[in-house]
Length: 121
Image 1: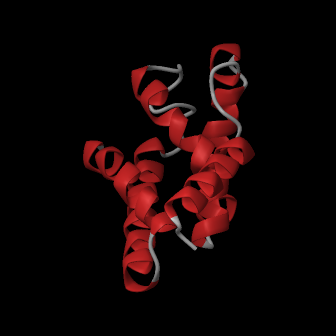
Image 2 (image 1 turned 180 degrees about the vertical axis):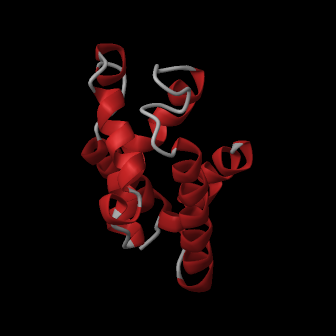
């Protein structure tokens, strides 16, 4: 599972900061990472089984990027990775998570601003 976690950030960035073959390759790699994470999650409530733990804490920030991945990467997270979406929503029910995590649309707006500043169409 660690290899999937380590790869998500650069791949996710390439999904919105590139075009053509690089973007498509990044999308495929990101999908593969999410497949690994969803497989590791399985039918458990959290990655640590029945309770929210360190792995969940490390991974939950990526939930904020799901809308960005969907919009800029032409993905449907709920259709392709329903267990990860349910896990993210479950994590958001924890006050400590919901108060500290940026909203998905907020992250999307920031990414759009970054793209504009960098001149990425």
